[in-house]
Image (cartoon, rainbow, N blue to C red; front, top):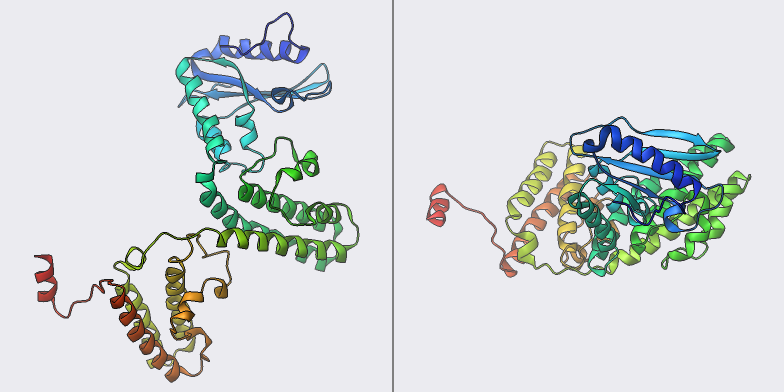
Length: 381
């Protein structure tokens, strides 16, 4: 199957492409599900010097050795294999990121398909790209942006190390890694992807409806300035502004869960966490007491926050950003108690247990607590 490529009027690049494809199909036709191309030619914006990106999809379980990277008449031809799993990863942005990879699938045009079944399978991947841009996918994509922000922090840390060492090359390397991580976050949050490559990044920035105010200017400083202090300041500003934007989007995701949805069968685990705090206090183990208090309070705060907001706050947020309901209910702040004051910590842990029990019972949440085996047996009957 071919899409509008009559041999008489095709550009020279397609004459060469059809030669490569015909040879591949002749030698390994039953092992190749489809062949297509993407990039500037697929989008209709190619120039005389543009390369042609061709891909083939091996049949499941096959690996035909027909891939080539060539220069023909001065034009680069990439003819490479993408298996179905990787192709789906491109469509969803799970492979190589959402900012650029979906364009490979979205704009791809087919040169050959082994059967209508493979064509339909590829069409379904195109629909996945579109589905992730719909309103229904907004919570999922915002959550992915929040998760991706961890990469921003890692690259910002690397940039700080490079600035401290005074190495401009390391700074530039980390700077571009930071810029691309920021763009990935923003592309996910906006549910859009870029059609062109990294070298055309700035001209695609307007596609991001929600973006830091000085995004373009900050990218220019990070990528072109030779002043390390200016680069570091721009990187800090860009990361902070991006985080604030993501934080605003995070708060826009209301929860539909009830206390019974969130806390069903949870009390025994929380009770065990409180027991670990008390045990560490009794044994005069301040570090063990500290980590136990941190674990029980942070987990309980996250569960309470799930009643108000549907986003996962585990790795993106500071504690204060998801502790509102915990504090509104007047639960003891175990992490604020000096670790050396183990008697007070133990007392407050007992108070937390009492207050939590009362609150759960008031919300009609079963504590799943039984005094004896006979009590459990009667319930199971």
